[in-house]
Image (cartoon, rainbow, N blue to C red; front, top):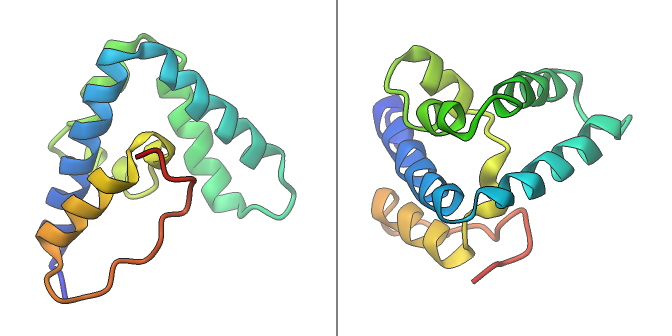
Length: 118
């Protein structure tokens, strides 16, 4: 079982990959915003998760530098925001699995929640 510290480090590593993707292709942020809009319009989607998406959307309407700073923020705020990050759609499945395996040895890796972008 992972500690909270290990979970946060794993999440930060995934978000560093996402930050590289965003730096290379800032327009990929639009994919995230589109997915968020779909979830915000879904009446069956949890209101608490919608609150998280709204908070991320406020961050994302600023400039890309703000988004990148939040993705790697090391304090409690960064930790809290990364727990409900909308960016999973951007991380290639192979990269996601590599990171998960690094932190969880001998446990099965569940299938991704989004289409593989390997």
